[in-house]
Image (cartoon, rainbow, N blue to C red; front, top):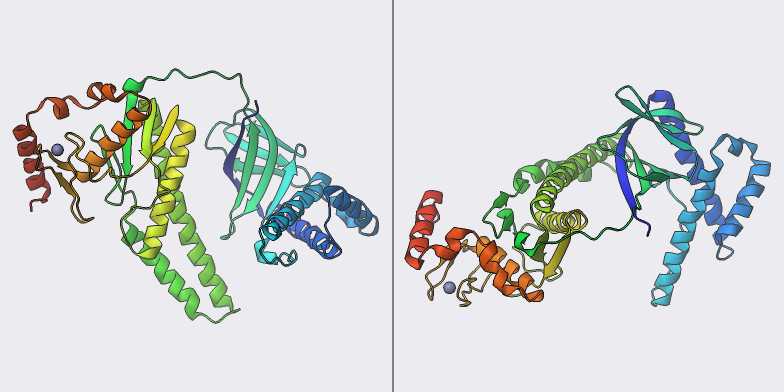
Length: 398
Ligand SMILES: [Zn+2]
């Protein structure tokens, strides 16, 4: 069993290292374009490309200044693109030929299996890259296993990152799973996540507030003249905002998913393939969609067991009596006429998700031991009284 994981770290090269990294990009791009030129005569295998590279080195001896495996790895990129084109053609799409890589689009090179080493000096960690030297790396977490490959990337705003591909294979152990520690999670706009234990996590992003500078930056870009220096500056500024938003999202997703993985053995969540989410501003909407997806992905690899259930009727069904209570998206409270249950609509949905999940394992009876005491034991009137108080307190009275 191999188990490959990627860890991304920020690099802090000094000026001369930065130049060398940039040179690496430039030479890889040069080799890339040489290969592209040759693909005009037909498909190139990796062997073909290695041969071309050896020939190139004879006439262009300066290529020896660069890490040779890095130059070889350019062929894997070409091979990947070629295969993608063939796949597209098979499916009946019209395909062109490989395109030359432009300067600003070429932002990554790879050291595979050799040419790199991690060293710790005091509280600093240095990544040694052959032909470049010791580059400071911000190691914000431990790196397990054996490093198989280092991919260096320059972000659009000019920051350098190293993505370490690690083999963390270890003897397989089957985790002990207790369904008594199961939870259902409903994701949404109002609360980013509401769970069947009654915890809600507010949306970490004030989308409107965060998107404002982005929209403004985008507008600025579109107003600047194409090809002008000012436009480039505006693009850089916009990309910085993009990165900032993405980082904040990632950070909160990691924290929340780690907490759920720690406190629960089994997590049930909606299968988001079927969109049933709140309509929203287009950009905000797409950010939320990818946010939930990324959150569930992190949950999936962190917790012992993540099971996705169909979101069908999870917001309509009354979790307690099964009565169907249709409601528009604006209605935040689930109010059942049949059993008088009055609770937050997302809370009700999360319990339905938990119920559906347990049903998949024929463990429906377990729900009584999982749900909070008060939901099971309070009389109908008491619950509705309590909820009404909560509604009044939160200003949700009809
Ligand atoms: Zn009911």
